[in-house]
Length: 548
Image 1 (cartoon, rainbow, N blue to C red):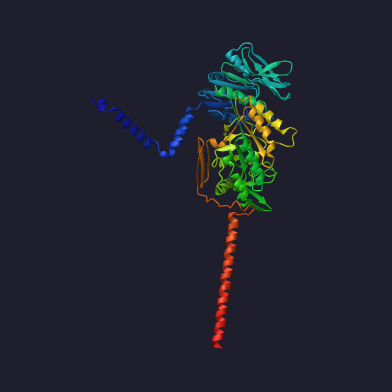
Image 2: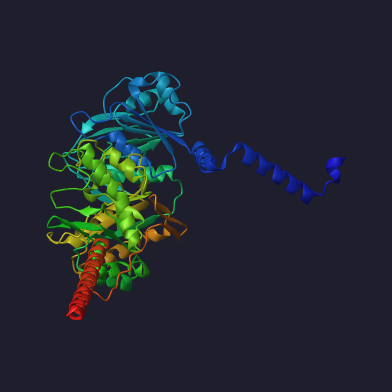
């Protein structure tokens, strides 16, 4: 009866207060974000990559790692399991199973049974007939490894393939074909689905097979997703010696076209054995400060520009990671780069690895400062040549950041038709329903060369990405740049250097200010000593006159 006499409003307030008290007591504030993330993680579907080998026999490309990167685009938790280490029950509880049958193997019936209970079973390459026998599919045909096919038909597009490429041809009579391969005489299924199975004849990350993979994953894992095409345009390699007039023209051109863009900036460069920074070139700083008001943003690309045959975070001569002491020094300058820009009232929101070459240690360090990465991710611990080409944004397991890919390359004036090459790649990429393209245009090129690319991408219904409207975080011990829903917050302990923009060409770096002040002090001291000397001389003359 006492409960019934309490008014509902007061009861609600009492319950809310009690709930808040319990949360305060049992969930410490410092762990609030972690607890929320753990809860969200538990709610995400679980996926496992079941593989015969991580790398195809006779090759060096890490198939499993690349597939994990692709799955980073989707809202799934991904684990790995080598098939030889499978034990009964190992596959239970997974919503999605990705079986990579790049080698022939005998699969236990209990394993096939566990596979059959998954929400979706993605089967790549060999051993599919064993699953067919288990499911008693009728009319199953296994033609083995085939080649001499010239194109793949997918979503109304014909994608050319290398005739020498081999893939496993096997399919049941009742399958629904999603992709077919054509050798100009007949077609065979390349991707099909049956029951809970989506079968792919070959797992490959070269174009166009990577587009087929991305598209099939998108169609299957994302559900009824609205088709979306976006492209991140980068103006590349802005550094202290870049002519400010060239950058200003590009910004003006892009602003007139109303196209969002990013400028990749390296704030220091070595000139004749001496490091100079953007602070030494106030006119260029002035131009960079106009970027944001004209639809642009900044991406930090390392700290110090290097020669063409060198990279800041990688030993290119031997194609291996830098020596530990050199790598430590190079990585420490990531923070310096952020803070140098902050001292000029410039704030980057993402990072680009020079040459896309970085060790696992480098990515781990970088992820402490940035949450957004532009470019390709290196998949090998030992060679910078091994990277993955992805047709959409993804949360990289290896890099630990959200990645905007560079999959359209760049405007290369050496090509016969550089614009047409980029647009053809963009057309092929659009077979992926939720694709993200990335390309760059060098800052020294005339902006007129960029306009046909912009027009062509717009006609292909690509939307230009404005990174300023995304969620990102950039942090150092002295600088914090965060954004959510397009609202940026900046906290910085770095004093902003006041640069007189009218003194074009005058270097006003902190070092040069020191030299100026030291010179002034020396002049003042010299004048003081001169005056003191004259006073003493005058007194001496006066004293001699009085004695005489």
